[in-house]
Length: 200
Figure 1 (tube, rainbow, N blue to C red):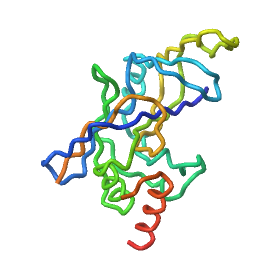
Figure 2 (figure 1 turned 45 degrees about the horizontal axis):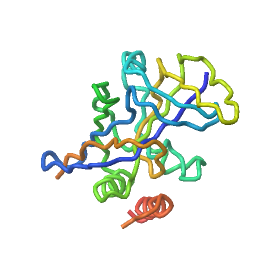
Figure 3 (figure 1 turned 180 degrees about the vertical axis):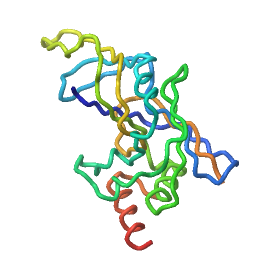
């Protein structure tokens, strides 16, 4: 079975003055919203069905991790620091818009730097990764030059991990709130994380 990773830009980040600023609410997927994808499966339009995560969520969240950029560098290579979980999923549920995640961030240099970057708008994406269990059509059709892109509907997906990413692909806003209390690029952000984890 194939695995897909999808990321969207964040927008309208609201810092609420309740709690201690370590609970983050964010969408990691949008439902019924067609968007263009070009990946190892082909070039196509994709729609995530509202019930796509129902089976995965019925299994509980014990196997779902919260990772920065799926534990990868901005160049797509494994990163030991980014592979350390940022926090614990408190709630993951579908609503009328998409898959809403509520996460309690850990007290660690990695989580602190991530929260700071989210608050300042330096983190620009929220993403999920999961296996594809059921789609229509099952395989992405080949596209003839000049022809319209085919549409693939994802009816059942897994949820291996989700979390913030500095390299969003899709075009919808996803971050809802950081319940509260000048890095500008993904590479600079990771360098800052490494410095905090080593020096801190």
